Every structure is written in C-alpha cells, then in structure tokens.
Image (tube, helix red, strand yellow):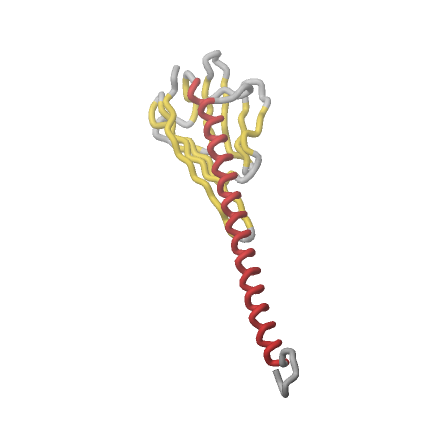
Length: 162
C-alpha cells in the first residue's frame, strides 16, 4: 500500500509473479523427468518380456515351432563351438534351425518355410554346444528411447530331452 491507497505495488506483483514462474517451472521439469522415467521403464519391461518370450519359444517351441529342448540331435554348432545359428533334428527326423538375421530371430523348418520369432531389436544371438545334449543360448536385445539405449541380456542352458 502506498499513500493510503489499497492494492499491490508493482514490486509486490513482480515478486509474486516470479515465485509463480519458479513454481511452474519446477513443476514442468518434474513432469518431464517423470515422463522420461516412465517411458524408459516401460521400454525396459517391454524389451525384457520380448526377450523372455523369444528365449522360451526357442527352448520350448510353440504351436508352429519345434523348440530346441525337443531335439534329438544338434547338427551345428559342433561340441565346444559357438555360432549365431543352431541346427537340430526334431523327434520326426526333420531339421530345424534358429538364427539371427537383420535384427530378427528367424526359425526355419525342413520345408524351407521361415517364421520370425522376434521382429527387430536383436543385437546378438549365440548358441554354444556344450555337449551332445546341452546347449547354452545367449540373447541380447536393445532399443533406443529418447537417445538412451535400453538393453536386455538373457543367457540360459538347455538340456535336450530326447
């Protein structure tokens, strides 16, 4: 109040406006950071689920795909070797294979028909034949969200049942 008049001075108004601008700016920064964390977390969860499903499909198979666990014989890689693809025979004697091609995991059966298990984001896929009945599988997938690379790495061993 100046000279008995009611109201705010320009200084008081500017001071209040500055406080409001700082509070609004802090809220915007908080929202941007929260959104980034949420997007990154969702991408990580989605990538881990895709990785796990791809690994499970290679190991156990699905309705259209014979899994490695049901194989009777590993054709390649040979014992002690590591490769980016695996070929095996199913209980019917048909050959099957999994490989990484152009960022996808591809399944090919004896008839030459192929199926994509994972469509994209595959960084590496390795198969190490530990013995005639045991295979180690390594899978690495990655995706970029807002310039940040999110990756998921899985490794497991598979014992052939047959």
